[in-house]
Length: 474
Image (cartoon, rainbow, N blue to C red; front, side):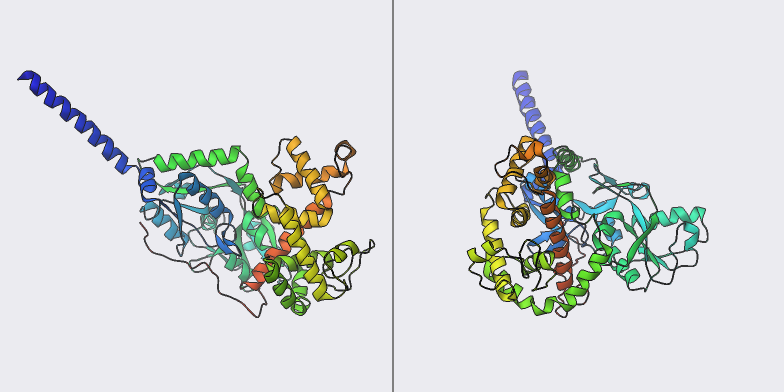
């Protein structure tokens, strides 16, 4: 009898242990996500976080969190709350799994949520408009009596409150309807004296608003990280932390940062103003030609237009000392290959140049993915495919990734150094030129996309593709 009772007790203990394990698995948020096959993340609609680009969802935060979802082997669902405060409440109330919204780590935010490992650092900057009639402020006291607005619930608002303790005469408004980019637009339009923006936001948006300038920094560099609810369940938090740490160690975060910021660091105020003027005055004469060429060759027409601007500033009579000419600055050999009879004819030049671009893209090895594939094709358009291949070989020799534009562009300039080019198949090349060439085209392309999708001055404006929503999703 005792033996039978002991046997029943043992069975009950095993069942109880299995039940506890089952319950443990059920309450693990990471297991719930994998079982449901969906990761729900809150973010902001902005150039630095998430937006609908020409090829679909884009943005630094989107690329990073999409890779995390892929690693978990689940679908990614993005939700865009209307305000920063709403993002925080959705996280703290477990309405989303976490937020990837370019949020700065602050002491006040740590009281209600928690951050994992930082993956980027930014500086808060005071922004003003040149030629506004106001002198550039150089210190906090210069802001007394001026109109200042910041995004409600932002780290900028927190910073202003800290400064208020030292400067009681400092006043500002917190705007809960407009985002940072829209406040920059108000300053650019001379409807607001100042706003505060993070350095990454300013780097991207300054190309669109060339009158905007940085008065001074309000902070040192501050970390940005993903935001999670406070919880005893660390399964998702730990997985995300390990993911970010690995992405930082293997250089992937730097590569994503380069994709979105690498081409905007060398800002040209005069060049940007001239370009925006040419978009209004010169481009309309050739737009339909670019659109048709883009359709025929399955290339975004704005990328072709950006290339043409880099080549000729949309001047059909442009000619270089080496004899290349026309809107797309075709050589005689390229024109002959593409069966172009008159390089100065805009339609022929755009048609021939576009077909040649498609040809160059098709030559890039298949394992190279977008957007690196296109940037390498652009580089080969400028310097020649042979030299690009030489640079890829040098990249591999030096321990880089020959399929990454970010790595290859670091090694292209070595083609002008005898130590390196003497051992290459195609010899010397001015390797820094294709790097500048591609980075300029990327900036021109970004500006043209902004202009044609609701930006300044386009008669065919469209509504933004990303629609903000504000509803529980879990």
